[in-house]
Every structure is written in C-alpha cells, then in structure tokens.
Image 1: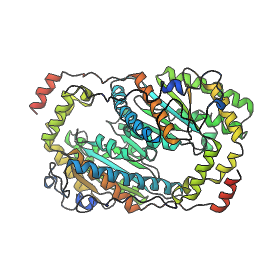
Image 2: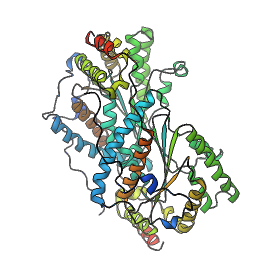
Image 3: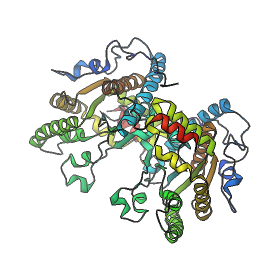
Image 4: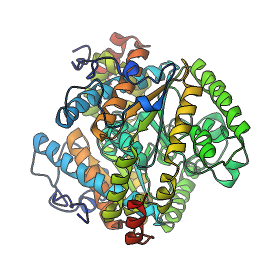
Length: 291
Length: 291
C-alpha cells in the first residue's frame, strides 16, 4: 500500500468544464442567464444528488492534499466569494458543498453590515483581515461586493465612489492572485418569483422564522436595480485574475453541483501533491521498531 | 408544515449517557481506562458507522437550532477541547464528527508550539483569543493543556509554575462556564502499541508522510511520563464547570461515536429553541404577496 487509491469520478458532471460553462465572460449580460435553467446538465435532482456526493468525495481528497502540500511550503490559497440576493442559497452552499471537506482546512466568514468601527475604514480593510492562509479554502458569504451592490442601489455611497471601488477591487484581487490565491467569485442567480416562494417558506415554517427579516421584502421593490448593479459589478470586475461565475440557482441542487465542480476544478488546476518525506523512511522504521 | 420533523434517533447509542460513561470523576486513575476497550457499546465497527451517521444527523439539527437561537440573543457557546498523544485521532474527530455540522457554526483552531510573540505572554493569552462566540461550537485541537503536559514531561517550565497553571486553568475555565460556555474536555486515550501501528502506517504510505515527524518517535521514550502528566492534569482540572472525559481511542470508530455523543448531549442539555418571530406573520404574508 503506497498511495491512496484515487477516486474514479469523471471530472465534470456537466457537458463542458464548469469554469467555462458558468464564466461571465466578455459582453456579459445578466438577462442571458436563465435562473430556472440547468445548462450543461442532462440529469435531474436525483442524479444531481449522486453526482454531488461524487464531486464531494473528490473534493475531500483534493482538499486534504492541498492542505498537506501547504504544510510543506506550497503557497496556494483558494477564496470562494458567494454573492446573491437574499434566499439565493449561499448558506446551503456552505453547508452542502464546503461541508464536504475537512473543517480543519476551511476558513469561513459571513460579512454583515459593517460595524461603526469598520465603516470608518476603507471598505477593503475588513476583507483583508479575513483572507485565507496557505492551504486553506476561504469562504466569504457576502463580501466587498456589497459595497458596490447595495451601496449603488440604495445610494449609500456617491456614484463616483462606486466607480472608484470597481478599480480598487480589481487591484486588490490582482494582488491576491499574484500571491497565489485562486479566486472564485460566484453569483447565485435566482428569479424574483423563486425568492417570493423561498421567503414564503420562511414565513410558514417556525424553524425558518429566524432567517426572515421584514427588510428583505423592502428590498424586493429594488429587484431590477439590484440586477443592474450585479450586471455592472460583474462587467467591471470580471478579470482573468478573479473571474465571475454566474450560476442559475432556482434549483438548489443544481447550484450546489455547479459550485462544487468549480471548486473541484480550481483544486485540480492547482494539482497539489503529497509532500515528499523530509526524513529517511528506513531509518525511521528502525527507530520506530526499537521504540 | 409548521415545524421540521425531529429526527428519531435514540439519544444514546451507549448503555448509559456518554457524559457519565466517559467522565473522569473523583479518584481518577488513567490505568483504569483500557484504550483497547469499547465500554458501554454492544455493537461493532459496522453498527458504529450507522450509529455515527444517526448521531451526526441529530447533531446537525441541534447545531442549526443552537446557531439560530444565538441570532436571537441566546448566549451559549460550546468549547470542545481535544487532547491526546500523537496519532490519537484528534484530526479524525474534527473531520468525521465536527464535519457533520454546518461549517458556518464552527470555529476551529489547531494550537501548535507557541510563536516567539506568544511565548512572551501568559500561556492563556493565545487561548483567550480563539474562544467561540455565541452560537458557535469552538474546537481546540490541542490547547492550554499542552502547557501542563509537554511542559511537565520535558521540563519546559519549573514544577511550581506547572502547579500555578492548574489553578489558573481552573479559574479561566470557571469564568468561561459562568459566561455560558459548555466546556467538553476530551482525552483520546490510545495505547503505546496502537501508536506504533499508526506511526508505522504514516511511514508506509506516501500520502501520510506529511503527518510524520521524527520527533514523534523521540516522545515515545517519555510515554509513561506523558501518561503521568495526563493523569495529574485530569485530576487537578476535572471540575464541575469543565469536566474531563477520557475516551478509549484504539478503535477510531468508537472514539468518534463517543465524542459525537458527548457533543450531542451537551447540545441537548442546552436545549436550544427556534427563535419566535419578532414580526407579525400575517402582515408579512400580505406584504410578500404584494411584492
């Protein structure tokens, strides 16, 4: 027994690599993405669960190797940025996708409205404090993008400051990429009708009341503005260093499979290797036998 | 559909509650715990996996409620402290037990040898910085107990300082308990022979080399001293506020089932409740329908 057997799961459950299938790309228009669709996938919810388990097992294996490599000095980090309207399923991605890997190698942060102390600083200050270390998968549930989304829609910052921020974000992310961070920015794209159904479920179920906030209904009046702000942000910050992926998310199972596969492809591209022994195996065998 | 169906798993797969079965208790003697045994459990590895899945599902449900309650102001925290000799399975507990709950509600920290900056401070300083917030399960992979274990065995601190630390730890933990932290301290107890087998596996498998450190073999020469240091630490710091549980760990599946059950019992004792709606459900239904 020399090496762990590699898990034999086809690399992609979709008909092309997820990082191409979901790429925002040049001339991105949000209206071209149908939140109710399941592009590139022939299966259904049932096969989706099976495929997610397969991708999850592969992810677990890759993540362990990624973490191990970092202990021997590999500098890579992964940053998964999750954005989407309320109820779009960010929490479900954390639970069902990120939850398939060892908690030891994950650093998760949910960004809420800035505190008074945070609001006094540049908007990227609190972001920079939560970046993943080498070998870690960092997960941002909301992020610095709120500062060009809700800030634009609700006019919390002047238009010229929003403009400045697009550039500041690109510089910031380029710098992270230069320092070996693979950045995966995901917009979970739901329809306004699906949001109504999900908010309704939160109202009908006592175990979901804690997730409901009357303010979420207020924001629905600005739906089109939010879509415009997402489109603008994606157009302005979709870079080679930090690409955007727009995932149809009206079907939760489909969105989870998509994000799991994006994460898997990112790890496969890094191709982490088990570190070589920095000791003489035979010598240690003898020492162990004598101990 | 008003409430989520409760998962019908018997509360305890053992023949008595885990917090009694594994309690160190008065007049604790480590020699009374057989690392190869599986006290209180009639099943085997196969049923153990089934039982762990059941306890894991219950844990996931309880943890979500625990997290939800904290959002509405419930002050409780859980701190799981994992201690044990090298290869005792601390990492496996994190992966297979802590990994059953939502990563969103976990804060994990692995304590290594203190940095130069940490070593200049009191030994509890770096510990206090990693404590879980309300609604979180904090997991310490090693902890402040290293400062009375390896420090005692390898004489890294004078005997009177070790003595002082027992008291300082008890005060520190009492204070945490007074502030609504449920503390679960676990010693994963393996035999010296089992450690040899596990170190040997790390030597034979390339995908385990990164976990092997020649220094681990050096420490085996001090095995009896370590057992003495564990026994002393447990005797001196097993308090009502922060009890010790000593879990036979030569069988990994058994130790995982034990710790999962300890965690489950702690959550059941807190008995977190879904927060009541702080809004008028009918009013919000109308607003949502009109949105």
